[in-house]
Image (cartoon, helix red, strand yellow):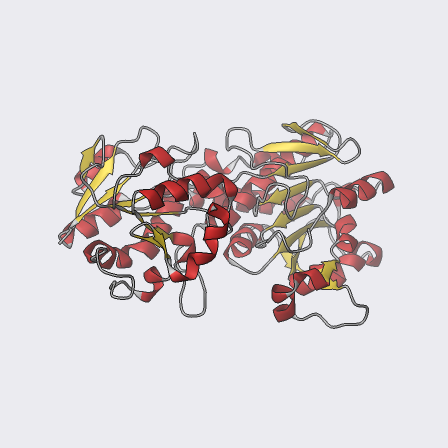
Length: 435
């Protein structure tokens, strides 16, 4: 029976510093008789000595280890015959850039467990970094707002905020946000910014993380309808932040006039719906895009939407924190996910061109696509806490038996995309993307 697992180094991104399991988790696994091998990494947030003290074996390769945990996608050339790999594979939508990787795994008869598909009986994800994407995304968006306004000639308390990656911990970042909140409460923001409004899409973990950071400021929640009338009402203060959460029925509506919104129909027939978010754009200072998006859904903000807004002079909207980060997706002009070391660009709505950095005409977009890695220690600890109880059964499983006889927790078996190199029943649909 196998009692060995490996933790691979992360090589997809320069600034990827997370780990699926931390030294604290390794210590627990070793205590349960599981041998943990950790591949060397010069950039991982946890040092080799931390893993050594926890009882891990530090190694330059994992060739003898049958079960390997990672975080992001693995190079196609890295896989070995008949091994089990657990990572975010990003294949379930048939993503073309990862089909060669999936094909290679199939050819080598690998087993693939995808964290994204580890769900409970209700389909709720159990192991995720989403909350930390929201946390880092909101911190970065406030930092970006301060830097962008300085370029535009306006000093704000948000200049005191740093990019998430420059804080030692989430607690340090939270304290900095609180201090900015106290300044706003005491001194207020420039009158021309009032009312200062932040919109959040969705109600999931990403949105909740973003809202947690915003709530460290003197925040008041208002409805979408109240947002539209806030400026005209005159009933607002420059010492408050106004936050609005948008759900699917706020941002989309049936194409057929007078027809009520149906969430079930929206998911089954999104072609029957159109975007209705445009009316809110002139009333937002910052938009946090935190909602899952599919290419069959209407876009949240199109290039046409933002061009019309810009030409009308209704550019209250200064920053979009595109945490969802679907290139050419729900925010149409997010042309790519940005890197931690080069995290923002300014999109010119008239010329329809992006310029990296804080300068330029138009709207600033923060679209870092590995946001949790800006809070690598905190996010890895939380991720490992959710994962660790599944590991003994993942390690002990006999993957040589048929899929039907394979004994795994149901949450893990639902996430098994490949078994001995073959697509499992729930993932047969991926074959059309491989042919």
